[in-house]
Image 1: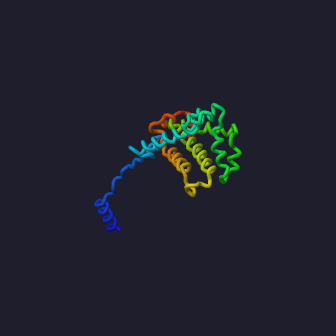
Image 2: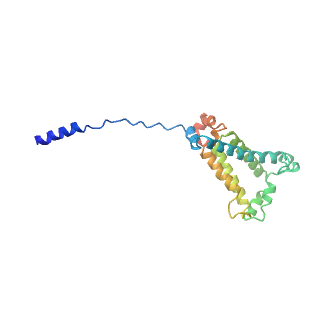
Image 3: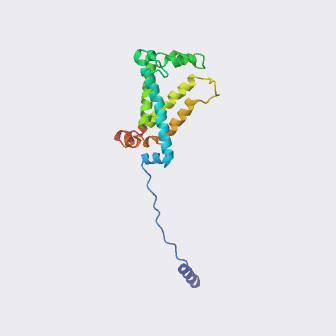
Amino acid sequence: MAITEGRNRRNHNLHPAAPTVPVTVPAPRANDETLLAATGAGPVRYVWAAARIAIGWVFLWAFLDKLFGWGFATPAAKAWINGGSPTTGFLKGTADRTFGDLFGALAGQAWVDWLFMTGLLGIGAALILGVGMRIAAAAGGLLLVMMWAAELPLTTNPFMDEHIVYAIVLAGLALGGAGATFGLGRIWAATPLVRRFPILK
């Protein structure tokens, strides 16, 4: 027994225990920084910002043209401020589509016009400013999917068109925190209201 204990002491002296090194785990970043990092460092976030502003302008321009009738897609005589209906032309044109009866019945109704125009303005402004990206992406995606459904069956593709592509990009913009670059996303996220209700980011 004494021989065994002596051998164990010699082995312990020859092979001392390795010193314990403390491991420091970095603290997680704030939400807005994490979202910014998700878009990548460098050129990628600028591409997302450009996509955000471009799609925002598509929505905002549709609102302005239908409101004032600047002659691009809406003649002045059919402008909303001149008594025209922003939804009638599109919805009436779906009569021969799969859901033509449903969408045709909505054409020209005041509440549909107001909801549509408010959506265009809100989505466009939110995307260009980089605030409220989650709600803008959800509302914009819903509007785009409804417009896609109104045109079924598609004439140039079995199921895919620009409405679905835009809806996917909107989801990417919101999830990637694209409002933080060339936008007010970080300032907006730091407000007490948004901290209390993160869905407003």
